[in-house]
Image 1 (cartoon, rainbow, N blue to C red):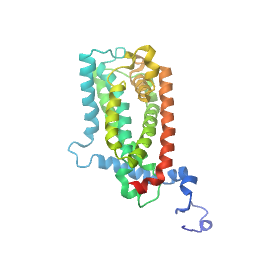
Image 2: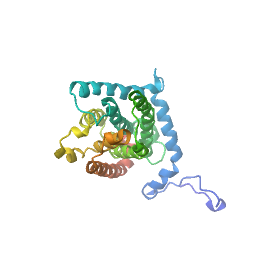
Image 3: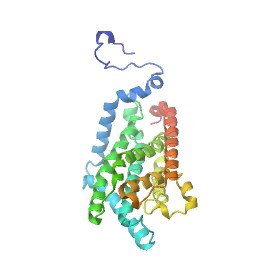
Image 4: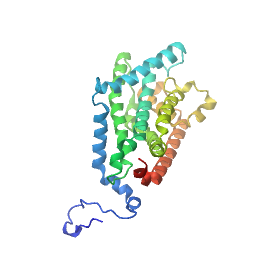
Length: 286
């Protein structure tokens, strides 16, 4: 135990850490706040390392969703001739769904590898381990903001002006982060114990891309199945993003959105519970 005379410095918060049995359980959420500077440092490191020694740097955050949008527009819009939302151009509808999908997918994949990728740090220093997957999500948010520039360019190209619903964009970004947080924490803990998950996660994300309404409108799903389809939390998030960016051209199916958010919150509870239960074993397993 580190002992310090705090009474001699009543005007300042203690700059020391007392290690004692059971501290992680009693002060875990307080420690998350105390280690906020570490969170910012790790988030900045992840952003810098992600594009270090790459040829085109930050353009990777632009090219990946843009090329996927082109492929989906050709396959679903031109060949399958699926309808767009209202009069909105099909490419614009696809990209409006691509943004939240890549935000969630990047956050989830980055979080899943965060503990294993920082094995040396886990074994030497005490801090709430939840900081690592949380900091990985920040990288996905940065990618989202970069990719948003393409959406602005597409709107200018198609002369499409968003409506007043655009003011809800920050809240919907938060909703997308909530959707990624639960599975991200769950996959992070599972990846530490079962390394096979590093192969399962890319497959799951690829599968999720095609069962989510990214390349098509969820209005194409028969009405009697839409509520069941909304058990996929990405359905509600993508529909809400399109409503936010395309306005009345893409109305939100309210029962489905509420169900999707309920499933997302349930996953957060499950992810946090399992992560906290297995966190003490991380140092021994990595």
